[in-house]
Length: 338
Image 1 (cartoon, rainbow, N blue to C red):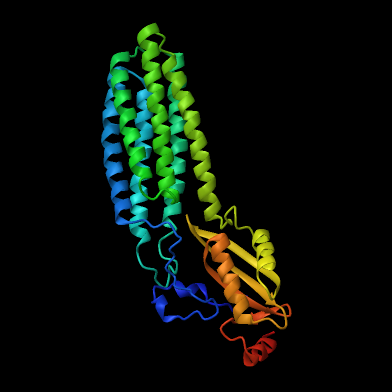
Image 2: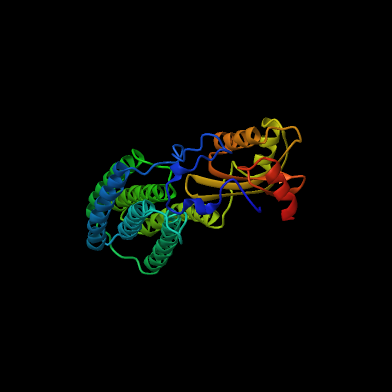
């Protein structure tokens, strides 16, 4: 659109309070509906990282001593847990850095990039587990069921605590969701190791160890695929599920008086929980333009949680006038701009 209610450059680290945004009403930019990563949430992520990383070393040693692939695979997955938590913490820290003239949205999208890295590490660990399982089937190795059982029990308790701890904080950000998925998958790995240890203890049937490792890897693969789709969708500027262009157009035409057409709708997520949009609206001839724009912005926030809509006026099919100048002079300017 030629002009709009405010350009994306409005994010250039300046004081938003200086703008009255008269076209959109109470546009205070507090983003209160956006999931907030507080210092408390950051501390929980950091503490969870140290707990997971420490036990990952313990579990790896236990896997080597007991000869259990299930424990080794689980320790490898705990390494990806630690990576996920570490990246989430770094992403939150960078996300607070102010926007500048080159990065007008700041560093918020680093969270999504870190989420993509998390997903790819999960795919890598699945490949490692499957490869090792095939080797174990070809050449079975003895497993110390007692040691395996003890370490797996401790691992299950550690993962249960970390899972509980993480869900007490902000669980809506893509990276926190990714970390939770990692820990849930690791919890299943610990349960699988416990079952394998019990079977080996009572029957001596060691193939159960690689079999359960492959089963756990499939569960991890499912989580990895879900996380990968989510992060790629955001990186490809995909619209949120509940905020497609057709849904927005139909809703606005139904709820906003004086609005006869909505066009050129573009909706995307900057990062998890932060949705932006640009669109053009064509009011009826006798409509209160400013009132229509205020209502459109209100509905976009209320219904679709769009925090920063950029709205252009479509005058008889020609979008050129800023909402901040709905007057005769602006209309004249619109006519000359085409």
